[in-house]
Length: 112
Length: 112
Image (cartoon, rainbow over all chains, first blue to last red; front, top):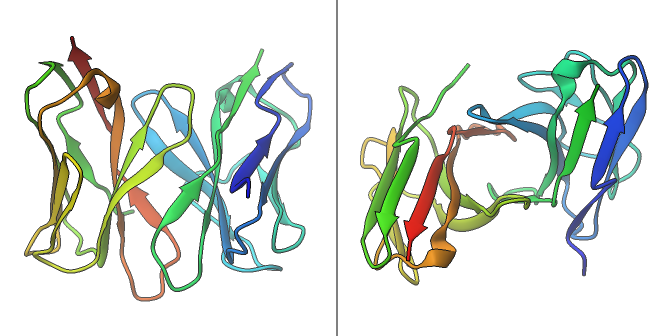
């Protein structure tokens, strides 16, 4: 039982490159979330998915797209990376009917 | 959007001391959560609070859900070096909301 897994753990991109961050969970949770964490800013919600087939914008969605491929997987795509997207990205899940989110280990992204 | 004011931003204490941190908001929350984040890891849930006035302990940690539902505090007694990390409060507005609002974190340093 791996919980929430994220790949890759680290990534360096050049400005303008694209990439997809992957998140998978084996807890059978309905809701999945993508956050970014910057120094002094705490965790800010980028996008979330309350259930398979639905996605909604969070606090800072610009420059990102998401895809809820199935119940297990929720990916975050940067189409044209910018230095302002240098951050640590966390995926989280939440079981329906509860308020507790469980986090993955994070992806550390640097955009040069 | 809703904001949580978490204080203090950072604390430097001696091993064995007690620690207290809190979160306040202008909004009413249905749930308060406290997370700890170790360096290089994702946040891990410490305590969840579901009822106004609720006081819950987890080992040396004690948290309370404020009676007004607009605040919560976390106490750590007899701190040890492994308590080092960043502590986040999070609140859920309820009413079917699937989103959490996070404080900006309290960075705790424990000197042995």
